[in-house]
Amino acid sequence: MDNVIKFPTKDELTWKKIENWIRETCKKGGLSDEMIDDVITEYKPFHKELFPRYESVMKIPGNIGLSQKQIDSITRAHNKCIKGAFDHFLKLQAHAAHIIIGLIARNRLN
Image (cartoon, rainbow, N blue to C red):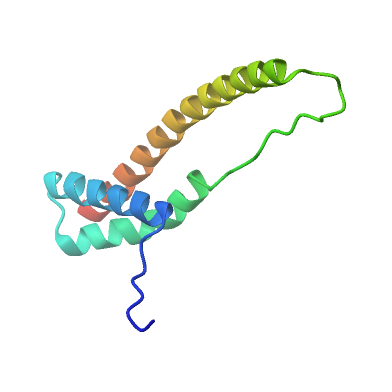
């Protein structure tokens, strides 16, 4: 097993996409490669705080007399509600990230 290939995690792939976006955006804004590297280095800790990994499982107790159909209906409604909340906050987080990246990039240009 000397030839084990490490595949990137979902978080690593997501960060790579974000890093590429930052590079493209900063390049269009006139930043040098060195400045862009500085922007990415400075932004990365903010990103980890803005977009922490979160997972949870909703468990409905089995002893409360609900049928599987009722449980499935509750689970679908709950998932829809949670998805709506996540989508809403993701937009706010992304907006905050854009502001932070813009401020860091502007600081590098001045």
